[in-house]
Length: 401
Image 1 (cartoon, rainbow, N blue to C red):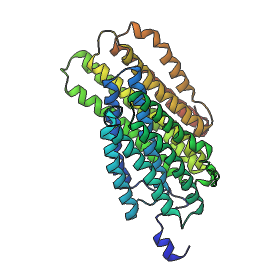
Image 2 (cartoon, rainbow, N blue to C red):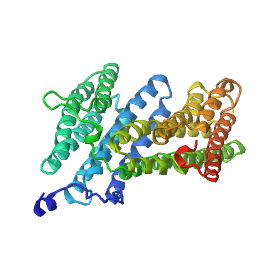
Image 3 (tube, rainbow, N blue to C red):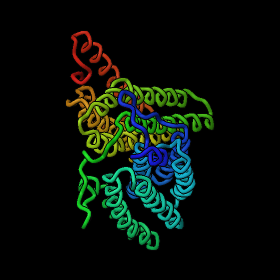
Image 4 (cartoon, helix red, strand yellow):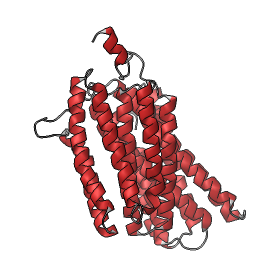
């Protein structure tokens, strides 16, 4: 590459001993997804049924997918370059349209949602292909494949927007299936072949930091929901107890992810011989369970704050146990992938959560929430003590569970 071509390149310059920094425009872009997460949690609150959970789950998978794909792109492209910055700002506008349409995506705003989603996915991939065409033949071919798959799924997204809710759900589920399966197939495309994870020249530290920041966004939304709900309620003993319980539960969630897992994951992917594989498994797929658990947990916190006494309804009980369970499952798989072993503390936490199922018929929402919070605290403390004992024994962080 000559000097003039180098100046025209939109790709990040890789530093051998330092990962690419997360830029301010990337953080600015993420603000749209703070709103999207709030919309998703409120949508689930308004329709706490099995069908409502399915709708919210599908929309969450779409929101996560458009965000994580953008994170992959900014892992390669330099957001400090003006064209890339403008790309992110245009995607922000489309993301805002997508976010505002979430509550009515299965009603009258289906086309707004599907149109914004398809524009973000296909438009970003076309931009990326054009940006790397002269500078990275492998990535150019890869994004030709990715664009082909996204155009295929776009047919289902747009077709679903013109159908009734039941058919829309089936078509949009098919669109998501196409997009979620395609990376595992190497985006195989007739005439273009397939790629391997070794072809995805990922800067691991940047990817780890981006996903960690998204976890922070989700936890921040959880605290925002708790604070906003508490501010509107008359303070009473049960309400205050529910507020404190919710806060401690959020702190425990933060501790479980960031005390050991986040940093260890960053070190692992940065030193991996195949960072593309870890980025795909640990950060692209597994992290969606972690974020989903936080969102469902935020819904449970709001329900307990609003109705701390009496007996929990089925939806409340499912959210109280399901959110932390998703979160622990996600963290378990993440730490297994990055450390090579299952954390015993997390498995014990899942067993204890399962043991609370019979208690949903006798415990009040507040008492059930307290029990769940104590389990999360136990998991966090157990892992922390294991870390301390492991260090005293001279074990590496990868050997500590």
